[in-house]
Length: 132
Image (cartoon, rainbow, N blue to C red; front, side, top):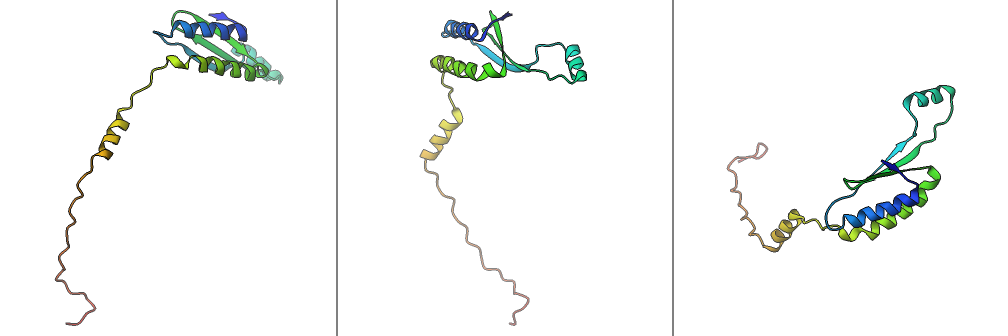
């Protein structure tokens, strides 16, 4: 996996989206990472040192894998640039057909016959408090 700085990562991600416009997919994952092994993290916790967590961003199109690690300061700038890249390549998405909404719309258009109301026959029982 190729670890890149944030700006080259975004340019490579753009080229991945362009290659997969007609056919294919691009998967992007983000996760919190300290970029240190578990043993070192335990030693730091025992000493009382603060652990700086970073955001690990990975992208793959099935053939090529790229990743970058972002600090908290870099994250907001990266997120804005990443949103721009996503908006620029949303045109390749296919609109999902929703069968349930179509069926519901057709059912509403067809007027249904209202069921007949049944009349209750007067009961022949006498109430307990009345005199006859």
